[in-house]
Image (cartoon, rainbow, N blue to C red; front, side):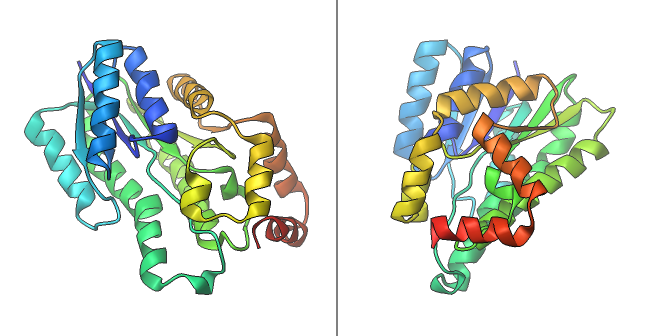
Length: 257
């Protein structure tokens, strides 16, 4: 039996995706920073779904982390047929508020590690009869967002990279899907230190991680190129395309400043 590898799997959307895949009979490899949380998730999954669940505590902001993850899979003889690049976070506030190191670490997790893992695991994925890459972007990918400037740019990168890679792999055994969730009931706003306006706005349209995970996994197995979760988020992305950039950016700035 092959394995599904999920980054950012200790909580939130990543944890829910791991549970979704385990419920469909997939063994899961769970990656995140917190070993304690990973063990709890792995124990619950293996007990509830009777599949194998292994963990690796790893900080994907460390440059050699993707290589270490890949070699761990090789050494353990874990054939990966599903790669879920879910790990990511945001920093909310003025660009000048954060140090170059803080912004660079976020870029490493959100973009560089994702690309690195795709490149490392593609040969293994190509060996499978059917395999999947599921990349998690964000509804923030569809417009510039002042005070989330770097974060929204990283997610725009994930969106465009995923669609380009999907086209390159057309006709192969590897299907690439990119998901753009909107506000989800996770600790994103806490870690990002989103202000009160942003928190209240998010609370109005929050989706559960479980619902986002279900939609994401269904879209992946259906071979879809892209999915924006939630009707409100779909409307928002359409309006971002329809309206002048300046209007969209001013509206977003009022939420996050």
